[in-house]
Length: 610
Image (cartoon, rainbow, N blue to C red):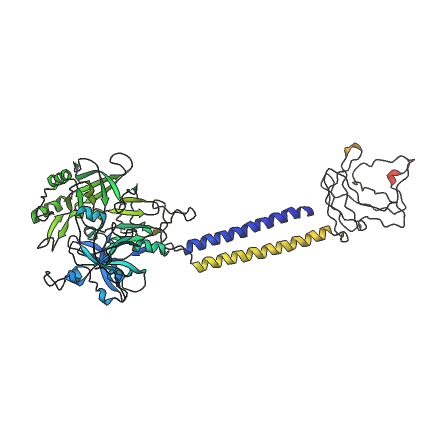
């Protein structure tokens, strides 16, 4: 009925209002997602190099103008180490090839943005190349420290670049190529001035500056070292380093999640529950008891208890060289081990036994590495295993990271390890990891990822969709509101009753019958909406009596003959409808009754004879 348009109209208006609010909220959410920073990739150099590998290296641009160098990733370090010209002295063999063999040289005097710590703190500028893991392993050296610009582009153009990052120039051969530290820890410089007073002045790492400058979505990264042996049969066996996310095409389907250890700088500790050599159906246990080992990619070796090393010696026939402190192989043994092609499985967990575990399986080719000067006078195969002096030296080095995929989350202080996937058909699929504070929209590395090839809408497209939806919603809202106002005014104007609304009037008549009548227009009387349980009459002149029109099919209650018929004066206007108009009432069978008008001076025939 006509009066129900009011609540329905309001319902439509409220619905549209909520729709508009939803569009605004969705637009804001889409805008937030669109503007959120994406993961940043450190480009692999496409080369295999190093005097203890070969290994996949990564490209950096250092200084202004930029000087391109190749480095290895250090997951336990936080600084950028680059080889200086002093690293290739005239006494070095193959001196002409030395700069390239060491990944390229950095000349800080050629950089206009280089600032030595000597200029800042009046010191010598020399500091130890120290990380907690390397200190425990007894691997050290000195570097000339300062600050300079470091970029991640492959050819010096575009890409992420940060000013005033900690850079150390090195000459030591303990690190044959430079190192790119990806830990978020700051560098603490202890400064001694002429008065011998000291000052601790921590400087932010490259990784932490990426997050501070909102270049990456979170303080997370993923890494795998790459495998030269796999490159012979796999399309992409290079290393992978991603800040703020991970590459789903490399992340294995099975993984373990571990909380960080309490010792900062040695937080990536995992339980090694067992190590097993497998040849056909023969299994050999290589680890007497479970150990806790730290992950590290700054050096190549796996450091295990002496007893475990002896089991490796028996299983593979290798021998410890006391002079070089390495497991060097002669050509005969090397060829035999390559032919045997054993697998070695590391079972990792959160605890030394039981609980969730993941297996990282290594083909023997992962241990088939080559040592060259200054580790050996001539190139010689070696097995990347070291005897640990104590439990602080238990370490899984770069050789381990060939087959493992690491995701480190410094927002939640945890990391995940899985077997790296080797799928030639899979394309790079970068997945951002959101921090837990971003509206509970953290993307876990174990969640189903969406392929980066499925490109999302651009920011301009998203803004256009949102603005268009809002504009259409506003126009529709205004149009419906105006239409509603017109209907409301028309239905409630007393002087515009040409098309009266139908009302349900419950009239108490004899026998409890319900009488329905048409609403009559009165002189200036405003008709309000009726309650179905009450009977209302239109207001008449004081000398008039209201007659309720009776259904034509209903039996009329005859009046007593002695009663006077309540007829109107002939001069008065009868408020009946024009016979041409259609009445809204219908009888109980759905038919419209015929209406017969009577002259003003004629009595209803059914009232005669009483």
